[in-house]
Amino acid sequence: MILSIARDNPEETAPENCRYDAGIVISSEYYVDDDFSEDQLVGGQYAIYKVKHTAEEIQKAWATIFSGLLEAGYEVDPRPIFERYYGDNNEIDYCDICVPITLKK
Image 1 (cartoon, rainbow, N blue to C red):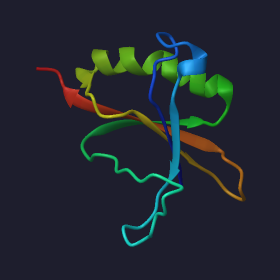
Image 2: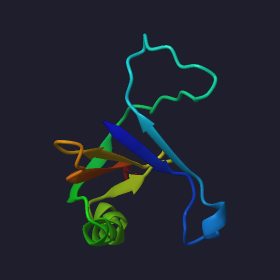
Image 3: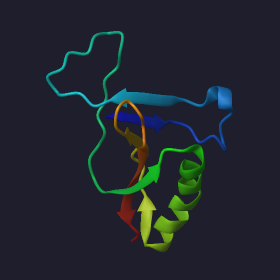
């Protein structure tokens, strides 16, 4: 499974300064040498949007996610939003956009 985290908002940060993490899921017993870094995603409640892995479908999803969450009574909390990619035969067919949420108070 491939994961990615955009660390900057491209509407607020120049493209050359945008940071992006890409990773894979490994077991806790796996040794990670100094050429790589290791991190953990914090658990909790996430809204998960499964979208076809095309630029058009991902762009459409990002354009509607936040207003849909607000209308449903949720807030995005400060944990990272991440994307999870999966498919068959080395082809990425779908992407899950995983948004950390809490209920509005």
